[in-house]
Length: 299
Image (tube, rainbow, N blue to C red):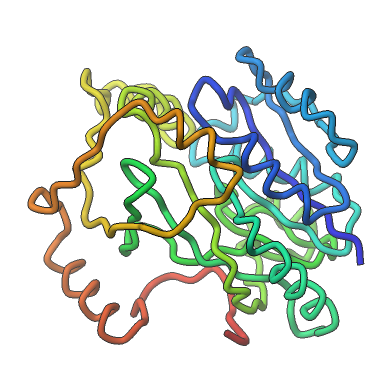
């Protein structure tokens, strides 16, 4: 069984993405790693090359501004990498997502077992969404608790929406014409993805957020919603404290932290409806009535 990895990045240093830790966390699991590198001016490509890793194959791209709205560019970049994988299985991480080294053996075993089961098309991963720093996570209905990050490379799977997840399609033409596709049949592998999208200096977080808003909204929307203040991490519904060890790959990033964050739960912006749903989730262990981009056939 051959395992391929794929990811994409552009100007990773400029916007504070832990893309090197993300790549390093994938390398022990895969036989090849396709890294789609958009036109960057901050040394991103050079840093990847400096890893001197024979498993890595870089695909150079130029981002198309015509695909900037609704996150289409992210799906396109993901698919460019997916088109290059040659393994029986494909593992995808976005460059703010990192796997823990202690979970490698368990994940490989899960892949081997799933490979023998024709009913299984992919693996579902739980997520730790870090917010504000490296000691708080956001686990509410505003975040996805699970996502598909590994699947059998059948040739008919493409990135769904803005590359948040994946679906299968009857043909490439159907996908390009906007077909909804079919949800993958998955099992929960239990291996968490450490997601660091909101673990940045507040000034850098503001810069990153305003830049990437351009890929969902037009210039007028971006101008209306731009604020001349650093990102406020306390504008959030609810956070929980996280005291487990982080992946070793993140050691240098965490040590370089140059800001302080104090969580103030009294400033919660959680709606009454979401408060009720959050309590139900705590009582039942389920997120009722929530959209799921997969078919869970076995936990």
